[in-house]
View 1 (cartoon, rainbow over the protein chains, first blue to last red):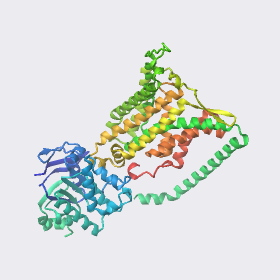
View 2 (cartoon, helix red, strand yellow; view 1 turned 90 degrees about the vertical axis):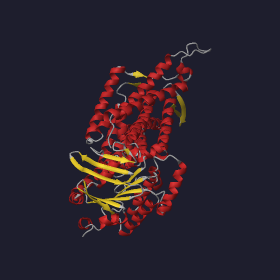
View 3 (cartoon, rainbow over the protein chains, first blue to last red; view 1 turned 30 degrees about the vertical axis):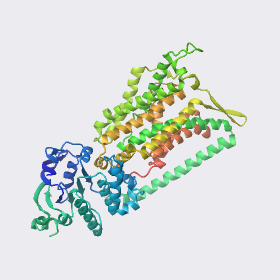
Length: 235
Length: 368
């Protein structure tokens, strides 16, 4: 098992945001976490990334407990998050954003290789490499955010709402890219409001509700589960 | 909701704006007329005097710029004004002073002069050592300040670290007074750097003195500013500083140790302030534990003038403020002791008319 999250509890001050969430991910899988706003999807990702502390809770990555590991060390272990709302560096150029993505990778040769791979996948970024991040369109910013994540050689990519605010045609494009990243060997933990899209590419999925895991199953099972259909797929 | 609010406030805002602009234009006209009167009609000062004012302004402006960069760097990353920054500069001034004292007490007899001391035998090394020790002292002070006074309050409301900064400032002033005494001390420079010596530049039928100490200060300020610019723009540390300034959470997700970058920002700010402190001592001579107060608060003015958070703005703001307070009293025909009034009048005017500063961008929601 690559990642195992067990009985994760997280508090924001007095608010009990995660109430014992458990899920796991095998190497090479795409696992989707779906659920409404405030269900705890992003909180789960941020806790895995080390931005929030589990209290109590266990996060085991490749046999090692990382629940107390600071964010920079989590990145070093190969868990890279592409945050919600992209959070690209608007006042830095596209190229500098990609350099930030490779912050933990001092190897220059590997950097050039990754850069080439990323530009091959996102040719628009190559055209705009000298432009400031803030001048890109929403779709381009999402691509930059993902490209930036890929620059750090992720073994497990945490994607938080990659389709948010994008036109339907771009959403499809983004999901195709996610699948192709996965096919090349990167495991993916995907958080999405767009349950339909997420479950259709996911190997397995979990449904979160108010800080708890309420359902789990393969992507197809969940897609055809009447409860999921009613609550998240618009009946 | 915010949209509604702006629509409702629009009319009153416009009236306020109009009044401000009318007042601003009147003020500008008044200043313009006054400058025209003193400079061209009365002609109290010749070109040589103006040049002296400009040179003095640039020298002090360079020091303001160095200190102002520290305010702006810290503000850019933590959105707080480090009001103890002037004291960081003061500690640097003490550091350089004690090195000069120490080196002057070490005998380095030579054939020609058996009473020679190290300071005068090796002046270049001595000055270098003074700057190195001064900057190290200030860098350590900045780092400790962050660890002790600001880091525990990182998640507190924004007013809290501000109060802590003011407290730290008072603490450092008093600690320096207890340690070093309240008396004014004087930098004893190596003979080749004596204050009042320098090159005479002929202007018209007189000459203007360009002092060695002033030249040293100005050149070193410029070099440090270029160095800082290169660090921020071209290095890995600089990029991580900019990333942390823009978004701490995203920076952490890139694998940047945010606390470490914040610490290094305080170190860099300290180095620049410490260099300014040693320059202050070498160029002006007299100082005591209060030496950081006025330059600190003026450098803060300079940082606001240039646009707080903006590094080129701080450099420009410092130079401009140095020039304005040096040339200003003469140009306006007012008492020279009113130069501090000029600096703070500028602060108030900038805050009224252009709170984002000359080079500043409108504050993003995140920072307000």
